Length: 620
Image 1 (cartoon, rainbow, N blue to C red):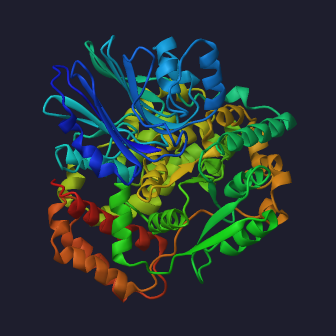
Image 2: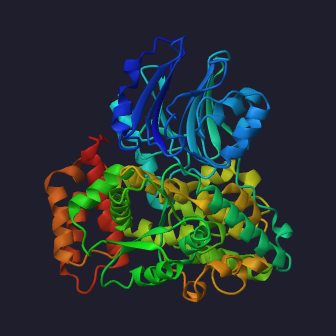
Image 3: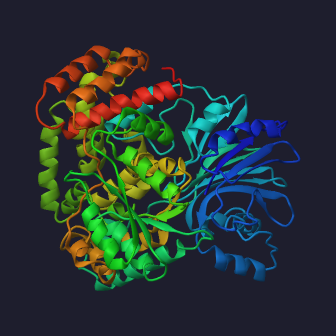
């Protein structure tokens, strides 16, 4: 797990000084910094290393035997020990004990298809001097970030946007992406910052004499609807159990101690339950004292049942402004709740406990349809009559002047994905009254999801509504918002591994009959698959999302935002109307009772826009 910076210049003349922005990423790699420039001066690679595997000799860049192929790698490659043995048997000479080195040797064997052999959470840049080929590759689900931009005729790639700013990238908001974020989420190749793009999940950026292009190597290929429209398959539970066990076991491989996130829920409890058969457990739970959102008591009982050394990270109600600002700045994303601040606090506690690797449960709600919005979509596939009734209801809603993103999705898909409806109700309609009128006019007809739907037709047409919805969710909200927690963890030099986002496990879950996914409680398939690893309390427990409590004081929350207003940030961001924001804060202060979920979202949106605006000196 590391931070990387890399450059490609079609005219050469790169030097080690061009890699200075790697210093901005030392939080990702406090153990060592390496810089390397190709003999031709066309490519330059740098890495800040967090030593986890091959600790004694795994410094980078890694290379093949010829010295013509070099790579810097961020993340972990699972099953690497077996692959190292197989490479050695085929005559390769490996110089390190690291997992990263297999990238160079697999590329040497098959330059066009080598990524298919990699399993894990990774982002890496590889340079082939003989072919003059520069590759920037991101893992299948987008767990590891990889950003790029052009600066003075040079392509610059980095693990975080702040390194691109340090390299001289223009510091400017992307108004179109911001609008898309509020109405669905920006596309997997976009960011909130003008001129800065992402390598999409499951794709590589390729640069050579023929130019620069994005080349997909993997996609979320769900079966056609009629292929999952059958009876429940009891054998599917066994396949899921085997894949989860394998994914957890592979992710326990490290040359340093491994810890675990543990909530009161099914996903992290499943991971910890499997791991308990193989390693001594050190578990970490976020605690929200006095809040109904607190899961620490259930997590504590699970930890006790498994004999874990258990740690609680207490996050008080009404988190102070500086903690929230630190989370927004580290994550380089807008926040809509205090869960990001809580995640950063949890990562800090793990770091302070002397750990740098933990396993967590993200991905279970996506692969096993744990969200209520996906359960709603799942029901649309039960019968043609039910879908027809839903479509008639959607048409009535669309006639009421909703944003173009909703009407566009309805026209293209024939239904409204549940997550998109939720987004409209909880965020879009809450934030729109506070936006500048000229911004609303500028994007009045913009369909924020339409382009992605159109170019994804091969993966959407003929699929069940729930699979269409999940595909779009994973390509937008999931990889751009939920997985932004990676930056929060790495801000405290903590690597988080996600067994439930293993692509081999996905292969088992994507073909499950919809009848299996509909039966019983939410995520019943996962419950049954992991029954032998779970306490009865967790097995029978209800699904609870990870949210932090809203601030307890209306006056204090409004006062924090007024301080941002007083410093002129909302005057300069080009998004929010300061008068409308002041009116919102007045209503917030005059209100009674706890701060609502909608008010909490708006507060965090306003605060995080202001925090990013100040931290990175962004222009409109």
